[in-house]
Length: 500
Image (tube, rainbow, N blue to C red; front, side, top):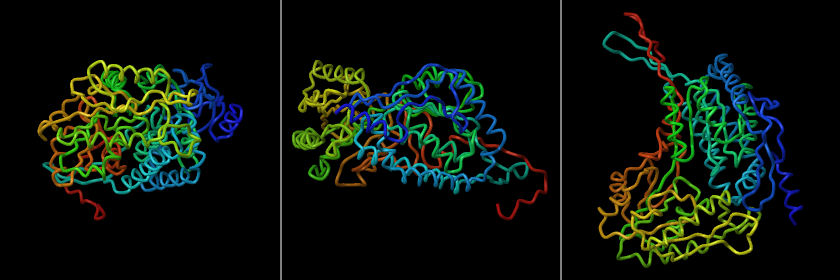
């Protein structure tokens, strides 16, 4: 059986052993002799390997990016043409949907259906959204001012160093590529060491779609590789998605070197359930938004705030919904939730579950390790009641299938609890009165919010307040994060072109 699974995994395009690095649009021998071994967290089967880039490999990648940027081979291409390339890349990803989802499922263990809906759909969506933003953006503007006419231009920021997390690698890589390339930048991408293989595939797709050689490089590796990229003097901007602790270190390094950075970090988001909620209609989604992707999502709504008067029926509906969410391997068509990424992460999550119990919370759904899935790092969902917002499980990002239900007496109290967090990334409100929901949304200190739903819309800004990060991704705001503004003062009497 294991041999059959291994053979099937090896047959997935992009899997297997990569002996070279994708630098400047070409496969080249690495300087480093180290490798990253990739094993499925669902089955334990070896998926493949890739060289682990060292500082010399990062230097080669940055130099290739700098040469391509300075040559204008991509940075001087009209924005509408760059947009066409991103649209073609999205179409190519859709054409290869089956093989791409198979590779991502093999690397991170998620069921193919989850990869398709939570990663591929938003991944191609964000590429197309950046393409449209590039077409619509005001790249040149003339302003009448105190001293006459100033020509304001928007130009690509330069060489981008991008670092991504492992939890939704397909979407994250598309998001980094989309923003940087739409702006006209060259990019060096460091994917997470747990999921490096999909980054190579997507880089090749970008070049096939029309991105010139030299513009894209991929440098797989761990913390040392990331540090080499962040600290490299040839990198003009860093964009990072990952933990708050790592983001703070990256932000400090960028500040020291006066380097631009965007940081998309953690969350501990609250779903506020109002007393008029239709729980029959929304009970499933209340559980889903805390548990999707096995809780490995920065936007997961892991604090569910419920009116004390309706707590029992809401919890009953959530528990019933969670019990229908089948945990399984990627080849199980019934599976909705996969494994967590590693044994270390599973033990960390189990430590939080024990901490919740020790603090006095009640596990009304006590997940534990599912039977029959001993080869992977699986956990069933856990739902706690009796949680107070000062508990560790209500304050720290667990990044696993654990939801805390917190009871409140007044809406003002619920708003205060939602805002009582070091994070401010996402949130939602559940009510029969949409206008009431909008009113509450304006009082919650988060960068994104939903009324009776939650999603990251690729055409609208995504990012967080407080420890959830700095800057925004997606939409025109995400494009602008990769752009520099230049003002050129023009002589008296200059006539602005009629087309402007």
